[in-house]
Length: 213
Image 1 (cartoon, rainbow, N blue to C red):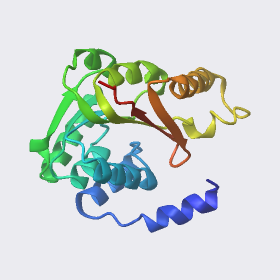
Image 2: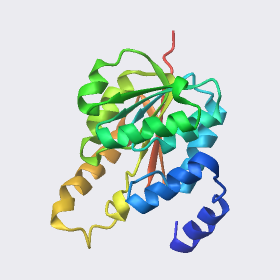
Image 3: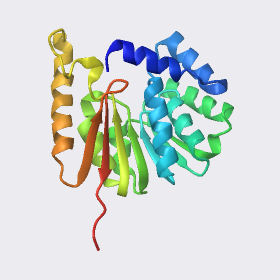
Image 4: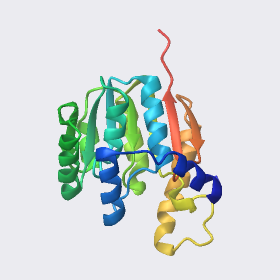
């Protein structure tokens, strides 16, 4: 989308209130990355359509996207992973303030270490964490994704650098190349149906094919 489109759409989605508005204000004031308004609405829409019983989130930050998804369907539960202890504590307070703490399992730790230990299955998985490890996150998440489940990855266009590396600083090029490889990897998988949506900082949406008995 061009800048004018993004600005117009974000103005339309600027309707949050209560705890969500408080989190947005905190994130803006403290430079904490949270999903963009159009991505938040997309997650809300997917949850309302899918009605997932269990959601896995890789990258809690301060709990914003978890709360979006929990509010979208009152019967869903979220397991969310965050390695930054300070942010995890803020997220816990936000879950409590939103009266959603009883539907959240917050795991403090590095997803690289936590994901291989998971055995439960999930209907929806949302990845929004360290860009340099997306393939590892993706493979481990896919292992615990139910057939017919949805796996969403945020920030796959990495501030636009993935499609235009002219102004990419040297220290960022490794991540850009890894994200390009990741996109190709996901699109080439025959056990998934994947599309790319250029909203926010870019989303990939993969559906795990159901196995025929």
